[in-house]
Image (cartoon, rainbow, N blue to C red):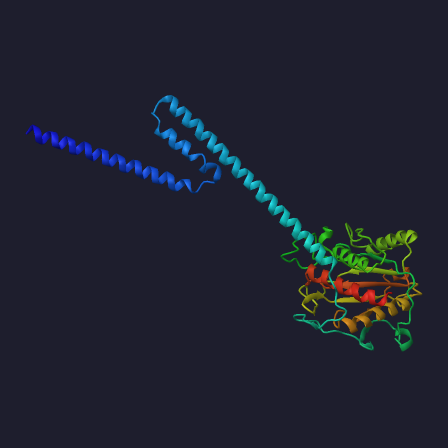
Length: 364
């Protein structure tokens, strides 16, 4: 009886020892597995932990182990922070590189002198014109008979200074994913990053690449009051011309809303989608003095004639009106309407690339 009892106690002790060894082995394997997920600083420090575990479980040893663990954790955090800083530096460098590449791409961009074009306006409004000069179409709203002599663009452009301004500075376009804005009116905003003023900046940029002397004025003329816009813009132009005489004066607009706010005249030039543009030329047929309206018309015909050679469809028919629109201020003054309310800003910016190329071919 006694011997049997002793045997069972021995078996129990053996069983406890085996279980203990198994537990220790599992813990060791678990720690060994986790060890692979730490970076170099932690992997070199793990043996210190094992050494601490093999010491006697005294208060002093526990304190030492705790200090070692804190050092390891701090070291690991430091390593992670350094890695994060390095990654951020790389990302910032990559972003700067992308921006520089985009700038270099713009600088080296070659605008084709001709391209395959196609008008791709959805639900277009039918073009109205009653006069043609070669491939140039004109909607004559005046009482003047537009003879061959009146239309022939036999002009000499000596003063190549270009003034760009906006009588309706707040005119804007249909918002797009790239250009979202907060409207302050119907297709209007005081944020000039999204109006015809931004389109004027694009035209200025390209014209300067062609070595033109360009002055671009972004004064508000239609805000806070819309009425009186032309009176205010006339004062602006007068003041600028006192110091910078310019024969080529462009009042850059977008087409009015009309009956369809979704109207978006578009021409595809190569792989680009550009908003169509239109000259509006004033006369003295409304009673206001305007002795040089015919010179203005000849300038528009000359530009549009060249555009029809290079990018057919970039322009809609010229509109000749009875109103003066301050165009008595220059020998080659005009309104250029870029797109309509349904166009996006990016389509209008693209138009300026091709308009500037046409102007560079005409004004030499």
